[in-house]
Image 1 (cartoon, one colour):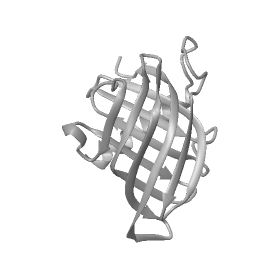
Image 2 (cartoon, helix red, strand yellow):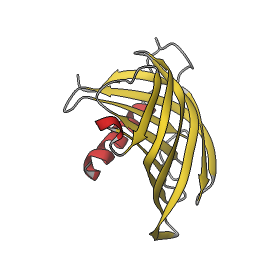
Image 3 (cartoon, helix red, strand yellow):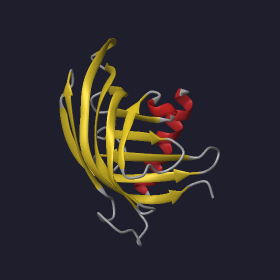
Image 4 (cartoon, one colour):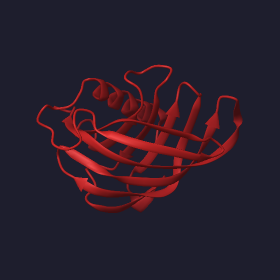
Length: 172
């Protein structure tokens, strides 16, 4: 997947995150919520707001973003998921570079700590999947780099729970 496309998705999700949620949402409230734990070569725990985005143009897609903090900046920690062409239904779904011949990948990014990790393998269990709410848990291994040593690949396990709101369609 091209880096330009990945960064475009992340930018779109970040903008969606800060424009707030539909007042008619059902579920966890105005920003959703999540908790994340990262263990391995990097150790972090954080929580914040969870939203999802639906697009149909230029390509169909479903994305989930989990972000700490109130605004984009040096303190933002973010886990984002690009999940195929539609919202996955309830059940357990594999996470990985080419999981089940569909796009189901994730990234962890921290501008504060200068860290970037991309999913290798794992799974997401979806407990709620509607047009206004997306909830479940995940655990996956990821490889990447940190600012203090961007030459050496590092490995982490990223796990968490989420209860996201959204349902926006930015393609209209």
